[in-house]
Image (cartoon, rainbow, N blue to C red):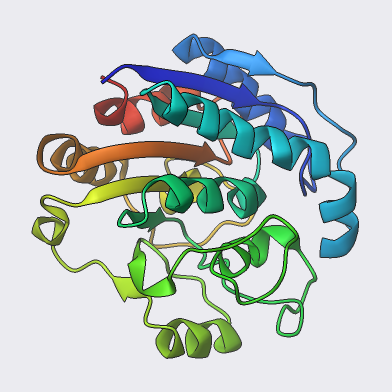
Length: 247
């Protein structure tokens, strides 16, 4: 099925300039359509970012919806995982049986009540699952989320993940035949290979990510992909790692 690759440079909850710069480099390498321009990075509370990034988040959800409406597989590039508060509700609205494969160093499963930082990017998946109200809807059953590569998890997040039935991927064969929307925060890679704004050691080598994504391309039904946190100067590393999903 035809892929539709779009890159959003606008700010959602970006706290530095590197994510937008890395997204642009990756977008140019992949020939993606680029939308928006980087906003001024800052450290703010989740409510501030939801307000200030409202238009960008709407655009993220709209781009996913437009591609799905046209019968294409959306590939969305963005600076920050916060886009998922708007994208995942759209996906499950159109594909109620789809699973979300969450490839990320972090669970992003805090809530405003449990987050130690107030960072929207650290609570976005929980919002899409309806654990708190983002204003963008929800609808994603946590039991339809499958995590892999997640290794930096706060205590309250761990409790919430277990309580809500979020799965951890054991063997790739578990994904065979599934409808999958794949979320890739490139910090799932070990920082030795791809720097990260919030680095966590013991990540995946690129070859392991390529192997997993190649299996998905062959054995699952790909609904769409979102790719965040590309590092400037490492566009080729990122492009090579995600290549199986782009064909």
